[in-house]
Length: 115
Image (cartoon, rainbow, N blue to C red; front, top):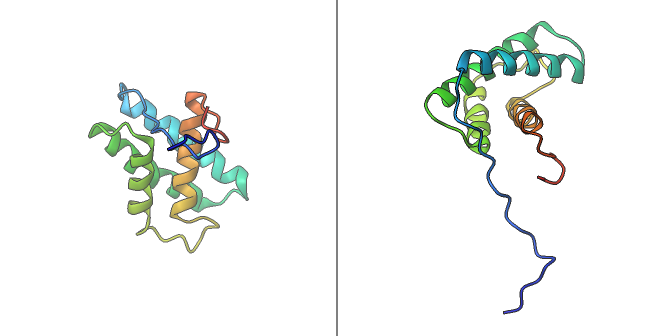
C-alpha cells in the first residue's frame, strides 16, 4: 500500500489544561460568548440567557473533569437542545461552535487549519 501524502489526516483532539478556577473560566466564557452573540447579529436580551446556559453546561463539564473540546461541544449541543431559541437568531449548533471557536482562539489555535 502506497501512502498518499494528499490523503486527509484525522483531526487531532484539542485538550484544554485541567480547570484551575472554574468560576473565573466560566466568567470569561460567559462574557466572551455574550459579546460574540451581540456582535455577530444584533444585541438581544436573550443573548445573556444563552451565554449563561451554555456557560453552566461548560463549567459543570469542566468541574467533572472534561478537558476535550470536542466532548465539551457535544455536551453543549445536547443540553442546549432544550433551550427555547425562538427569540434568537441562533440555535444549539451555532452556540456550541462559537464556544469551540472561543476556546481555540484562547489557546492560540488557528481554527482554519488546526495549527
